Length: 290
Image (cartoon, rainbow, N blue to C red):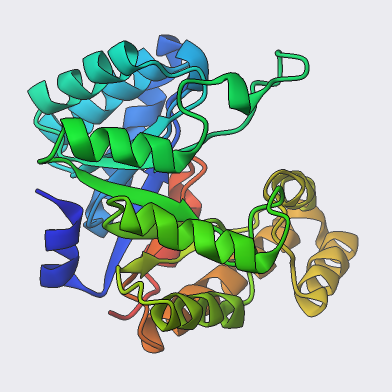
């Protein structure tokens, strides 16, 4: 079923994001996590996508299994990096054959193994190009887009980033999923700005539970999200007092408070970045009041 229709029927909700294991040997463990998290009754489950052929076939097969074997509604990620019209047509056609109706259209990050990667040399340079292609060729697909409440790290300004978020929706994006953030004021300010610009699609906030100091610093370095000083101090203090076990406790408590506050103040739902970790997600999901 199309996610925009599900949102109208079942808000507020919880949704989940998984990333496909690179090796099929890890699939039994991965689907064990899926089986455990199914009890949270997520509105949909997004599946990340390897640009340039990395884990594309894995993503397709995993999305198919989520739909057919686990009765979950998949949101298949699709990136423009390395994409061609023929390749996209083939991939999306296979999604349709599997009964998958939802795509998250992304530009994607530059491949780490390609020196001086040039987005301008790509057939699809931006997420907007991908959205336009999908809307013209696969009209029944529900297309979502990503947004950055704190602006994309490569954007020259906040106003430019807001304009690009609006453009994605004008081209056919039907809902937005945010990059992770830790200050809910940033999310609600972004939603208000979008509405003032005439954009009224659902904006689903993405929440990431912090489980260790190392993972926190690594993830933040990738996406450019900021972390409130008080939260960072609490994490560092916890690490000094009890290592990553204590950091986990502090991180889980913060994620639960953040997610509940988002729901209480009117967010359509919460999109939980699972990191393929069942225990943390169950703690959060089972603690929320909808």
